[in-house]
Amino acid sequence: MFPFTPQTEDHQVHGTQNFLTDAFFSYRMRWKRRRLLVRSLRRRKEITRAVERQIPKAGVLIFSTMRNEMVRLEHWLAYYRALGVAHFLVVDNASDDGTAEYLADQSDVSLWMTPESYKASRFGVDWLSCLQMKYGVGRWCLTVDADELLVYPESDDRGLDDLTAHLDATGRDAFGALMLDMYPKGPVGQAQYETGTDPIQTVPWFDPDNYRAKLHPVFGNLWIQGGVRDRVFFGSQPERSPTLNKTPLVKWRRGYAYVTSTHQILPRRLNKVFDLGDQTNVSGVLLHTKFLPNIGEKSAEELSRAQHFENSDLYQPYYNALIDDPDLWFEGSAYYEGTAQLEALGLMTRGTWG
Image 1 (cartoon, rainbow, N blue to C red):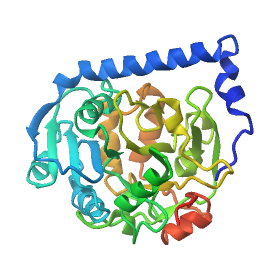
Image 2: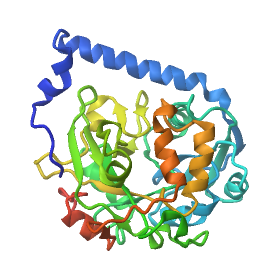
Image 3: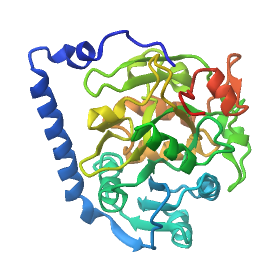
Image 4: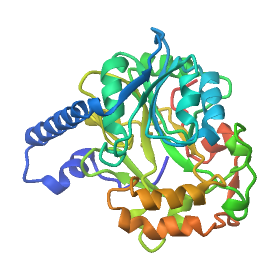
């Protein structure tokens, strides 16, 4: 799928800790997972139930944290309903643009609200972990942001229930996806977008091939970086480029815990979601619609709030560049044509998905 450092798992996962036995390393990971779960439980009082509806007993559940996403929300809900999502469990983080009110009116949405710090909650992970522990055990849980649209081979014709049935049949309880940044041609702020429409019509371009990957030294996941943000904003500091690998779809069990957003999860075995040459894993892509025309306004807000990165000062030049209305397009950009195109480019894989 991607070029990666060809090291065995034992060497890669334990190479920086060769003074530890495998057993002690596993012991550390178990305790880390327990600490994350305890941390999440301690924050359960930060979210207040606004609307809780009856959740269907079958089907995929979506978990999401949002703030001021009314521009995308109507299409986002319609998109995932078309894929067969059974119910949406959403935490609204002090929206003031009508997002919470709109969600509260949807018959397939249960809503919680919080004014607390997104950053202090591990970027919403702690809040969603509480909901996953209560409502998601034994269910396929899809954790996505409002600017992420999941696609996978033949997703235009085959819904999430088909995908999860395949994963169940092949003994897999996690599914991986590359976060693919989509953008317009020309200055981002000058693109045209109408609220409620498909954002891909406004941001149909992406970087097709400038990605790199290696196995993460601790969690064992394929750690992917690159793409347009790496090319435009982090060329001089590629190590700070955003992480693009995610494990958004998981058949939830008690004791599971996301570590950093959905980039890593514990237990570590759940991170083995991408094809590393065995050609068995199906994987997908999260079409990331971050670069709509309102990105300058949202970047100015986030620069002030400092809620989206561990060390927000390091990302001040990035936010300033977004406020300056950049043109992200270049001659190597590819126009999005569908899932077959992404599969041909190696950005998603079919595996044994027939």
